[in-house]
Image 1 (tube, one colour):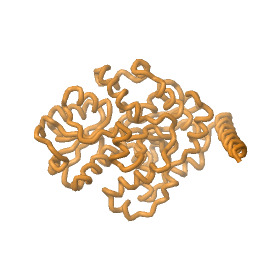
Image 2 (cartoon, one colour):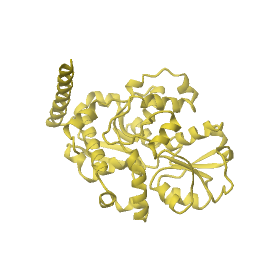
Image 3 (spheres, helix red, strand yellow):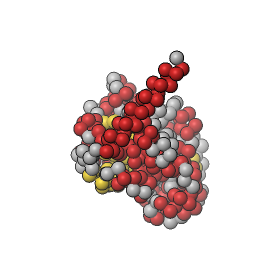
Image 4 (cartoon, one colour):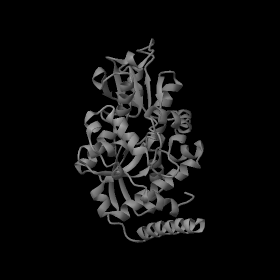
Length: 344
């Protein structure tokens, strides 16, 4: 019985590897792609940057034009509008859009926790005590409708506050977000590294919830909450299977490289502009985020339900919708990629 099971596993692995090799050996159906991302400098999207900087996309025969937006919701709109074929964005968009009749599927995971930090501004709210104190306040997010907005909504909902009880302001994912906090233009912020680490180092942020810590993210959301990933329209996936495999291969290689990388390796590889003028802060950010980055690109099987539950808690339309959660992600491409690149 044991021998049969091992033989079956071995045969399955061999089949996946053969499929990956065959996909790479054939010409890609669509090697030139536009990829949309919201806040490319963020540690949330580090695997994308590593795959680009180390030439992993090119090695797979891909020629990517990466278009950077202020937030994930804008990157999503680029895909839906047809100006991009693939998005590097938050996993929950695949669930949200299915409820709206759009069939999207995530193909490779970059983050196994959201890495979003929600906190108050000590300058404008020195007496902050509970989330309820945020009623009537201004909250900065990367862009309205983005994953940072969803996270803020979720924290507010647990405290009995509705999205309409606060004002959301798009502040981006870089120096503009820091400036908004320092100028007192916002009373709280939902953002990611390196913005968060810079604010923390300068004591300009009081943390309310920190989902860079996987255990805390699981506690906040009640289960594994997939974060940054590559997702595409199902119609594109159906027509371009070899191209999809090439994208997954590049991200898996980047994921593996990051797990073996030290701060010095990261500093040598990412663009200088990502460092926000402070290399030490970026190192802090990398060390804080590393544990939340996916080591292998695989989606947790329970992740889609966690995302649905989080969205349903703030969106009555999703709460009453009947969804096929098995259709919003698949591990088939990253399984093949891990067999092809077992060591990065």
